[in-house]
Amino acid sequence: MTLRPVLWGFRTLIILCYLKIFHQAKGWKYFFGSWNNFRCTQGKLKLSGGIWIESLALCHCTGGNISIGKRTFINRFASIVSRENIIIGDDVLIGDHVSIYDHDHRLSNLPTTYGQQGFVSAEIHIANNVWIGCHSTILKGVNIGENSVIGAGSVVTKSVPENELWAGSPAKFIKKIAN
Picture 1: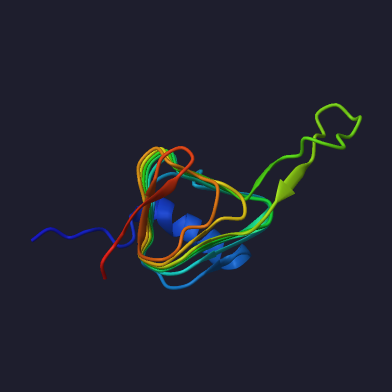
Picture 2: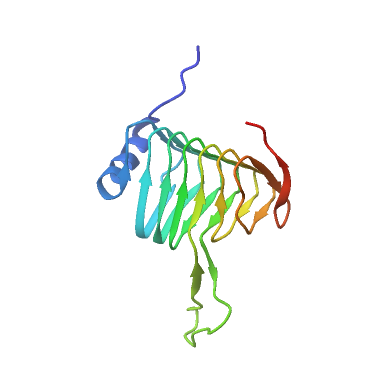
């Protein structure tokens, strides 16, 4: 019988205590793969129990909020960056090298100050039991419905209804998924 670690040593305990004090983390069943899984310059993290975040994955609040549901798995090199709001449901699987950004750079009415381009942002909502394949990108304003699958290497630019498989660049409907 193999025991999967529920609380992986000192590192996870220290990070979890920080999250419980300064952000919101429910329960004690977590795994954080590295010291730098989280970066919050502004905004808040809200974590439910049973989350597994692999090494070199990053959840970065740059003025926005990130909420991650129960038993969600985030694989290596995934980046979740929020300037507004990113909500990830329960039992979500996020593959390696996935990028989730609720903002992009403004292209018009640019300020004259060097390096201050500005941003346009819109909330992202990923419902329960969603699977996002490796090397996919989820862009601002997207809602992904419950039980949906995003194929590897997809660029999701518009909302995906529940129980559907989408893939491609830009992502397009492939087929319905039976419950």
